Length: 206
Image 1 (cartoon, rainbow, N blue to C red):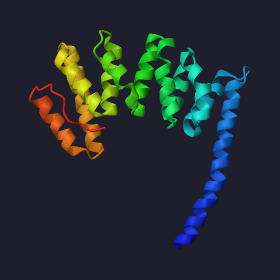
Image 2: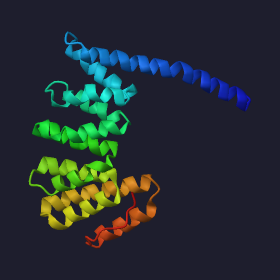
Image 3: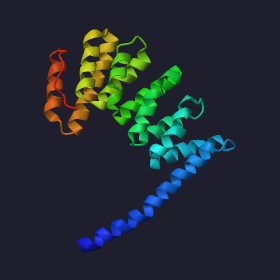
Image 4: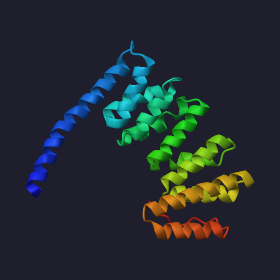
Protein backbone atom coordinates (compact mmCIF):
# COMPACT_ATOMS: atom_id res chain seq x y z
CA UNK A 1 0.00 0.00 0.00
CA UNK A 2 1.37 3.42 -0.95
CA UNK A 3 2.40 5.89 1.72
CA UNK A 4 -0.14 8.42 0.53
CA UNK A 5 -2.94 5.89 0.79
CA UNK A 6 -1.91 4.92 4.34
CA UNK A 7 -1.84 8.57 5.39
CA UNK A 8 -5.29 9.11 3.94
CA UNK A 9 -6.66 6.08 5.80
CA UNK A 10 -5.15 7.27 9.10
CA UNK A 11 -6.73 10.68 8.62
CA UNK A 12 -10.10 9.06 7.92
CA UNK A 13 -9.81 6.86 11.01
CA UNK A 14 -8.89 9.88 13.12
CA UNK A 15 -11.81 11.88 11.77
CA UNK A 16 -14.14 9.10 12.93
CA UNK A 17 -12.51 8.23 16.26
CA UNK A 18 -12.13 11.74 17.70
CA UNK A 19 -15.87 12.55 17.61
CA UNK A 20 -16.63 9.10 19.07
CA UNK A 21 -14.23 9.65 21.97
CA UNK A 22 -15.68 13.08 22.59
CA UNK A 23 -19.17 11.60 22.59
CA UNK A 24 -18.11 8.91 25.07
CA UNK A 25 -16.64 11.51 27.40
CA UNK A 26 -19.75 13.69 27.18
CA UNK A 27 -22.00 10.71 27.90
CA UNK A 28 -19.97 9.66 30.92
CA UNK A 29 -19.96 13.19 32.30
CA UNK A 30 -23.71 13.32 31.87
CA UNK A 31 -24.07 10.17 33.98
CA UNK A 32 -21.95 11.60 36.80
CA UNK A 33 -24.02 14.77 36.80
CA UNK A 34 -27.26 12.81 37.03
CA UNK A 35 -28.30 12.48 40.69
CA UNK A 36 -30.68 9.65 39.78
CA UNK A 37 -27.97 7.54 38.11
CA UNK A 38 -27.19 4.26 39.86
CA UNK A 39 -23.95 3.56 41.68
CA UNK A 40 -23.07 0.99 39.02
CA UNK A 41 -23.63 3.46 36.19
CA UNK A 42 -21.51 6.09 37.91
CA UNK A 43 -18.73 3.59 38.53
CA UNK A 44 -18.79 2.62 34.84
CA UNK A 45 -18.75 6.31 33.90
CA UNK A 46 -15.59 6.82 35.97
CA UNK A 47 -14.00 3.87 34.22
CA UNK A 48 -14.98 5.26 30.82
CA UNK A 49 -13.46 8.63 31.66
CA UNK A 50 -10.25 6.88 32.58
CA UNK A 51 -10.24 5.50 29.04
CA UNK A 52 -11.25 8.57 27.03
CA UNK A 53 -11.27 11.45 29.50
CA UNK A 54 -9.53 14.79 29.01
CA UNK A 55 -9.05 17.77 31.29
CA UNK A 56 -12.81 18.31 30.99
CA UNK A 57 -13.40 15.17 33.06
CA UNK A 58 -11.21 16.20 35.99
CA UNK A 59 -13.72 18.54 37.74
CA UNK A 60 -16.31 15.75 37.69
CA UNK A 61 -14.00 13.04 39.02
CA UNK A 62 -12.08 15.02 41.64
CA UNK A 63 -14.97 15.46 44.15
CA UNK A 64 -15.64 11.71 44.02
CA UNK A 65 -12.23 10.97 45.53
CA UNK A 66 -13.81 11.63 48.94
CA UNK A 67 -16.84 9.45 48.17
CA UNK A 68 -16.93 6.23 50.20
CA UNK A 69 -18.31 4.14 47.35
CA UNK A 70 -16.83 5.78 44.27
CA UNK A 71 -13.36 6.72 45.54
CA UNK A 72 -11.51 3.84 43.87
CA UNK A 73 -13.33 4.33 40.56
CA UNK A 74 -12.68 8.07 40.52
CA UNK A 75 -9.04 7.59 41.53
CA UNK A 76 -8.50 5.02 38.79
CA UNK A 77 -10.12 7.34 36.28
CA UNK A 78 -7.88 10.26 37.22
CA UNK A 79 -4.84 8.00 37.29
CA UNK A 80 -5.33 7.09 33.64
CA UNK A 81 -6.13 10.56 32.28
CA UNK A 82 -2.83 11.85 30.84
CA UNK A 83 -3.65 15.54 31.21
CA UNK A 84 -1.58 17.21 34.00
CA UNK A 85 -4.81 18.47 35.55
CA UNK A 86 -5.56 14.93 36.70
CA UNK A 87 -2.32 14.66 38.68
CA UNK A 88 -2.91 18.09 40.14
CA UNK A 89 -6.37 17.01 41.30
CA UNK A 90 -4.99 13.92 43.01
CA UNK A 91 -2.46 16.04 44.89
CA UNK A 92 -5.04 18.68 45.82
CA UNK A 93 -7.43 16.07 47.22
CA UNK A 94 -5.07 15.13 50.04
CA UNK A 95 -6.55 17.24 52.84
CA UNK A 96 -10.09 16.00 52.20
CA UNK A 97 -9.40 12.25 52.26
CA UNK A 98 -9.45 9.58 54.94
CA UNK A 99 -6.39 7.48 55.68
CA UNK A 100 -7.18 4.51 53.43
CA UNK A 101 -8.16 6.85 50.61
CA UNK A 102 -4.87 8.71 50.94
CA UNK A 103 -2.96 5.47 50.53
CA UNK A 104 -4.88 4.86 47.30
CA UNK A 105 -3.93 8.30 46.04
CA UNK A 106 -0.28 7.65 46.94
CA UNK A 107 -0.37 4.54 44.76
CA UNK A 108 -2.01 6.40 41.88
CA UNK A 109 0.55 9.19 41.99
CA UNK A 110 3.30 6.60 41.61
CA UNK A 111 1.51 4.80 38.80
CA UNK A 112 1.15 8.12 36.99
CA UNK A 113 4.84 8.91 37.49
CA UNK A 114 3.75 12.21 39.03
CA UNK A 115 7.00 14.11 39.58
CA UNK A 116 5.26 16.96 41.41
CA UNK A 117 4.33 14.51 44.16
CA UNK A 118 7.91 13.63 45.09
CA UNK A 119 8.36 16.15 47.97
CA UNK A 120 5.14 15.00 49.64
CA UNK A 121 5.90 11.33 49.06
CA UNK A 122 9.39 11.77 50.48
CA UNK A 123 7.91 13.28 53.65
CA UNK A 124 5.40 10.44 53.99
CA UNK A 125 8.14 7.87 53.46
CA UNK A 126 9.88 9.18 56.58
CA UNK A 127 6.72 9.09 58.68
CA UNK A 128 5.70 6.60 61.36
CA UNK A 129 2.63 5.30 59.55
CA UNK A 130 3.93 2.09 58.04
CA UNK A 131 1.20 1.41 55.39
CA UNK A 132 1.41 4.97 54.05
CA UNK A 133 5.21 5.01 54.25
CA UNK A 134 5.47 1.72 52.39
CA UNK A 135 3.14 2.95 49.66
CA UNK A 136 5.12 6.18 49.39
CA UNK A 137 8.39 4.29 49.00
CA UNK A 138 6.92 2.20 46.20
CA UNK A 139 5.57 5.28 44.43
CA UNK A 140 8.91 7.05 44.71
CA UNK A 141 10.45 4.02 42.99
CA UNK A 142 7.82 4.13 40.26
CA UNK A 143 8.60 7.79 39.56
CA UNK A 144 12.35 7.12 39.45
CA UNK A 145 13.69 10.66 39.15
CA UNK A 146 16.84 12.02 40.76
CA UNK A 147 14.81 13.47 43.62
CA UNK A 148 12.75 10.33 44.21
CA UNK A 149 15.86 8.12 44.23
CA UNK A 150 17.50 10.45 46.75
CA UNK A 151 14.42 10.13 48.93
CA UNK A 152 14.63 6.34 48.76
CA UNK A 153 18.27 6.36 49.77
CA UNK A 154 17.50 8.76 52.64
CA UNK A 155 14.75 6.44 53.87
CA UNK A 156 17.15 3.51 53.68
CA UNK A 157 19.81 5.41 55.64
CA UNK A 158 17.54 6.82 58.34
CA UNK A 159 15.07 4.03 58.97
CA UNK A 160 15.11 1.07 61.30
CA UNK A 161 15.23 -2.52 60.14
CA UNK A 162 11.68 -2.64 58.81
CA UNK A 163 12.01 0.71 57.03
CA UNK A 164 15.35 -0.30 55.55
CA UNK A 165 13.84 -3.54 54.27
CA UNK A 166 10.96 -1.66 52.62
CA UNK A 167 13.32 0.96 51.21
CA UNK A 168 15.60 -1.72 49.80
CA UNK A 169 12.67 -3.36 48.02
CA UNK A 170 11.67 0.03 46.63
CA UNK A 171 15.22 0.70 45.46
CA UNK A 172 15.24 -2.64 43.65
CA UNK A 173 12.03 -1.56 41.91
CA UNK A 174 13.61 1.79 40.99
CA UNK A 175 16.53 -0.08 39.43
CA UNK A 176 14.08 -2.06 37.31
CA UNK A 177 12.30 1.13 36.22
CA UNK A 178 15.61 2.72 35.24
CA UNK A 179 16.61 -0.35 33.24
CA UNK A 180 13.25 -0.46 31.48
CA UNK A 181 13.80 3.16 30.47
CA UNK A 182 17.27 2.29 29.10
CA UNK A 183 18.89 4.35 31.85
CA UNK A 184 21.35 1.56 32.53
CA UNK A 185 24.21 3.69 33.82
CA UNK A 186 21.96 5.16 36.49
CA UNK A 187 20.63 1.73 37.39
CA UNK A 188 24.16 0.37 37.76
CA UNK A 189 25.18 3.31 39.93
CA UNK A 190 22.17 2.79 42.18
CA UNK A 191 22.92 -0.92 42.51
CA UNK A 192 26.49 -0.14 43.53
CA UNK A 193 25.36 2.47 46.06
CA UNK A 194 22.97 0.15 47.84
CA UNK A 195 25.14 -2.97 47.66
CA UNK A 196 28.02 -1.05 49.23
CA UNK A 197 25.73 0.30 51.95
CA UNK A 198 26.21 3.84 50.71
CA UNK A 199 23.49 6.39 51.15
CA UNK A 200 24.81 9.29 49.15
CA UNK A 201 22.48 10.39 46.38
CA UNK A 202 23.20 8.98 42.97
CA UNK A 203 23.01 10.96 39.80
CA UNK A 204 19.80 9.53 38.43
CA UNK A 205 18.35 11.86 35.85
CA UNK A 206 14.80 13.15 35.52
